Length: 512
Image 1 (cartoon, rainbow, N blue to C red):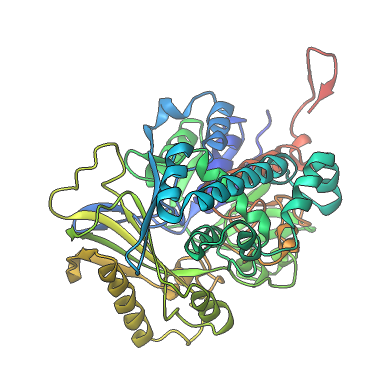
Image 2 (image 1 turned 180 degrees about the vertical axis):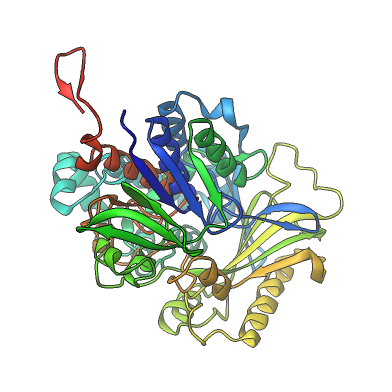
């Protein structure tokens, strides 16, 4: 194959997958990353000498990674050690109630029956059945599709899939749909939280997001070494196939010549020629012109509503009072106020829900770690990191309120200053420019939002998009799929096929 030079901007999950797949195809791949390590939002912080996953903490949809690893001649098990988690999550309310959901559906049914009664457990079964049907209907024509459209989705769904969506009520909100399933407000609250997996409000997200329940029911895993080990693994595999990684190398501009990509310019002033560029950053950065005027038309002109941001606390501290598992969620009774504060009032929630990842737990051994343990605590926040609306006093108040909720639920965390690192929307905005700290690209609000994300191919020849702000959306497996789709789009592009002589397959058909 003649040399085709590819620059991948950003070593996040999507950029790593694109780089790996393109290098495996023999292309000349260079990855530019502003940070000093791979991962992007899949970041790891060292607190009190301990590495703590401080971004995504849940590994699901392993079929995506089985597919990616198989495409480059290896397997997930050969490269990483992953462990299925018997408990999906533990949920706690400030009224003293709690509920575990399990990887085993029968155990979850019994847990819901003890928690809310047999009738509600049967409703839970009905909810799971509809979530499974929604996922099965949408996986092919939407999740796996490179550029889904309403017309294409209708054809891909077929009569059975259309009937499934009609029963779901695609124009109904997730919150409304959950009200048709559950009478216990706590269960409606618990499953409404799935909207936040896409950075959205349950009151505005489409009912189709209930399929996330099926994603978790198919399995949640932990990775030895943390989620960051997945990023390191993909980097290593890409290097083994010839990809070059340059860290602390921010990209300042994508250059075009006669309307198509011809290279990039680093913040240092260095210029690098390129025949194709994969941009693994937020689409908002292109829209804002941060990568130069030529690439602005690569994304829709109108800015969509931003998704959630967050305040996180990465900690190493002893805990007392509750039997935590790996994934824990702490709720208050008034759930609506959290999203009203964030999306309508643009302020930190006065009554936040708290997610706590206890990273030394989650195996069959339920013994609590001795001494300090590694924790990531997260609350949702507005993506206003580029504005002056989030004050230091408001952050302190949100922190006090969040940890007070943990104490009311029975959990005490013995924090000390040096053993805690806090990250705010302002910090996330600095890490991911033009986003305001939004961690999921655009909010998935309304049924049409599913079709408003840009795809891998763009109107700028030679420029391809990958990451959580493009189709199929945010989350580790979705970002990985977008990286795979960007690599496939580049390999199929006219710019590349000019370099590649036709290959005759066994069937006698000439293909590039």
